Length: 289
Image 1 (cartoon, rainbow, N blue to C red):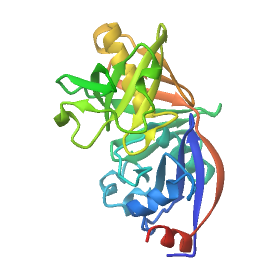
Image 2: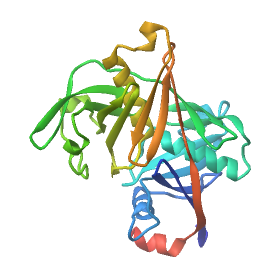
Image 3: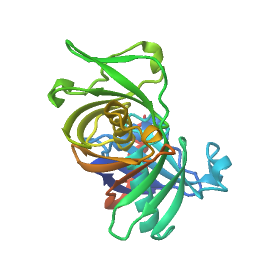
Image 4: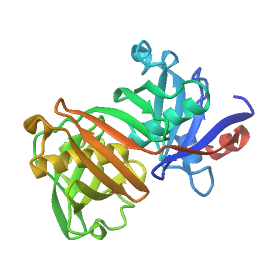
């Protein structure tokens, strides 16, 4: 391992990430190393880590290399692996642009949730083709304290439980995962969104992200919320034949989600790189002992 490891720090609607460029996939990022880097007091700090590698160099992405040169090896802040991160993929694309790997326009990014199409606009916003939502059958319930709500099970490449509530304060502190039932619905845990209405086509949410706790934003969560709201509101595009757009307020800003009649979902929002530097490899080795 080199004595210095390059990193950057970025965020999408204040969902923040440590970015580790590693095109040849030579840096050993164990769960303990990721957790140390994402620690907000003893490390750099972030909701998650974006490990930037060429698809051809990573065993989980080689099959996607013909479609997408770059693979977003995403990790949650606790070091666990995640299938997909909507805010993360926007920041990932912004990094590729900053590093000169891609230009404005459409690019493809490989993720564990499949290949995603990303559009880097001249105005600075980034739009991600998030694919189609899956709506597993079966009822789900989430709870906080004495409150219990029915939730919509939505999968955006990662699992979500969307609950519509009267007041976002009812979600509590969201430090710990809200209990859900049945346990078999999410064997690997779940992201839980609590949602209130702000107006026609306009909602606000708070989220507990699996492996990270409450975050300022969740891109896949905002997509899941828009899908659940469309079904609740009777505006399912597959039924109406008309695209539907929801503005989703998160703690860190606003995302715009559009679902089309063919089920394809697009998410638009900002992506910002705020700093870059070097990780001291000796510190990292000591931190994970």
